[in-house]
Length: 387
Image (cartoon, rainbow, N blue to C red; front, side, top):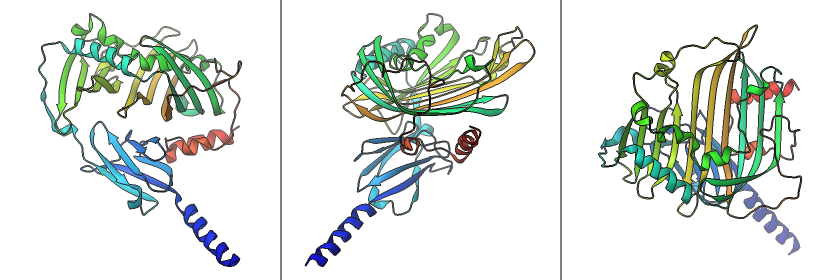
C-alpha cells in the first residue's frame, strides 16, 4: 500500500510540475506578417502584464490553465486559452483596425478643449493610492557604441490627488553595466525617478498642446475606430511653416469613459529639417525623439501600464562633439491598491539608478514582462563582460 501511495504521489507531483512551463508568443500583423511591438499580454490567472518587444515576442511562465488577453490600440483584441498553446512558441495574428478608421469626427468643441477635459478627467480617475511594481530598463549609446546599461525592479507608491500626486520609491533589485564618460554623464537623459510618475499621472507631456498658441502651431484631427465605437484617435501635427521643434502627437482615448489610453509623440524628419542647427559650445542638436505611454483600464482600476522614451542628440563640446542616444523602458508588472511598508532610510531618493550599487537577488529580468531581443541581450552580455 505504501509503495502504491508513493507511485500515486509522484504521478500527481509530476503532473503538477509539468504544468509549470515557459511559453513564448510572437504577436504579428495578420495582413503584413510583421511583428507587432507594444502589444499588451495579460495572463488572467496570475494577473501578470507583459509587453511585446520589437520582434513581437513575449515570454512568460505558465502555471496551470488561464485565459490570456492580447490587445493593442491599433488592432482588434483577442483572448486565447493557455491549453491551446501546445508549442513552446506560438504565433498570434492580430487584425489591424487602423485601416478601418471612420471619417473625421466633427465636434462643436475645438479638439484642444476636448483634450484638456480628457486630461483632467483621466487624472481624476487614475486609481490612487496605488502601488506599481515596475521593471525599468535603460540603454545608453555614446558616439555610436553602447557604453552603459541598467535595469531594476522598482516599487512606486502613488498617493495624493490630481495635480498633486506624490511618490515613494523602493528599489527591490537593480544592476548596472558599463562606464560613462565623466564629461557626458550629466546628459544621461534617463528617467528622473523622483518625478516620473507624477509627470505620467498629470499627463505633463501633453502640456504644449494646451497652450493658447497651440491652435496656431498645430493641426488637430479626431477619428473613430470602426471596430471599436468607444475608442477615438486624436492626431496633433505641427503646421508646415513651423520652425521650432514641435512633436507629432497621437492620443488614443476611450470616448465613453473619457479617459486617455495611449499617448505617443515623435519628431518628424520634416520638422527636424526645418530647424536651424546650433553650433555654440554646450548646445545640443536633437536628431531623434520619441515617447509612448500606455494606460490600462481593467474596469476597476486605471493606471500607467508602460512607457518608452528614446532620444538622440549631438552635444557641442569645446574640442569635439559627442553623439548621445538614450533608450528607456518602463512596464508595470504588478498593480495593487495596498500600500507597502518601509523603514526610514530604505526609501530611494536619487534621481536615477546610475550610482546605485548592484543588488541582484534573483534573475528578475527574466520575469520582467519585457523580453529582451537577441540584439539587446548581446549588448547587455557585452557590457557585463567588461565589468
